[in-house]
Length: 324
Image (tube, rainbow, N blue to C red; front, side, top):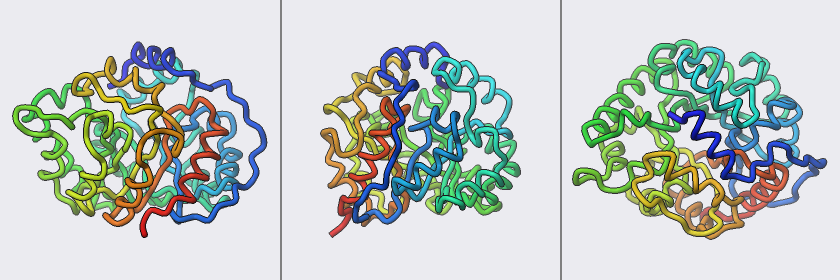
């Protein structure tokens, strides 16, 4: 769980452009090779808070076709809402999820701008006890995937914990299948180095049912965790259905296993807009497009210069040839 103290440290470490410049955005002329470039909305939370419908229109003007939502939501379990409030306050936010709208209103805004939302991030507690509400909202919004972007630290202290979390993913995935959804797990940097003789992330991949659990690869955090995105895509074809794309200003790795904020917060300033860093995104995307990835999301967490990030990253992602 991300604490208020850790997020304050994050805010101090980043040149976060919450007070950003927002000049008018005109259409970006490209020939799209990734047919539907998407955006993880944690890239621009302040813009959404200031003008949700207007920001969606801006995304469509640039050329984005898909968006991925992040919680908490009105139906999220109380403990998650309570833990988010001090974090949001520390980075100048007061909303998330639907930003004061109903799912129906959000869907209408998406439809009006030619946008879809294939996926959303929530939390294990909400999926366990409020799946009906998740499913109801997801049906309105058109989500196919719902899942989590982090494993609580107390549930990943040893290999048995990872076995348990994989089994939990299967259990929740089975319940979600019954309401027309698939469970997704978005990797961060932990679980990618050997623990007690095994790689925890490999254990999750091997122990979970592909029909119930799909993966969302974050290429930045996977690289920071000393793993190779291309190797994983080739080793587990069809498992990674979604991808978060951001670049690195320089190649950086965790000093340890990436399991705590003291390791990953210092890496936030190393994030770069897609195509402006050192990662071989061309190569990663070409392999991704032939190994089952269906949804490609730009996600630069709390982008310092949202206008530049949105336009430059879209231009890069829409012009790259993901396969030959």
